[in-house]
Length: 72
Image (tube, rainbow, N blue to C red; front, side, top):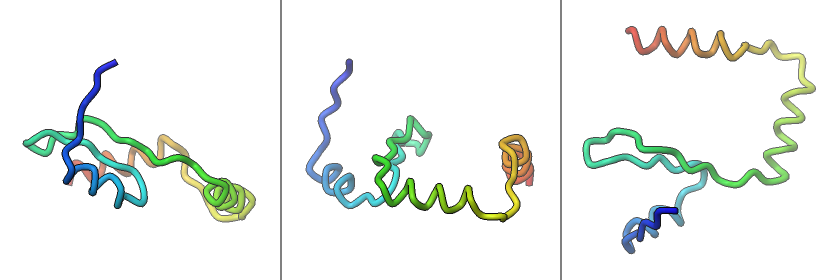
């Protein structure tokens, strides 16, 4: 496993993150994303949404929409 040592400034930014963290290089190219842990509130919200009668989009529909955004 590779170990990367964070600077004091980076640690402050990590501590302030309330959701995921995007890692980028000096040019802004995405290197990866670090997701926060799922807690009981996240599970409650997901269950509530699943039980609703709101229309849902399939994964393919979401990807098509995102590709359309990239094309514009």
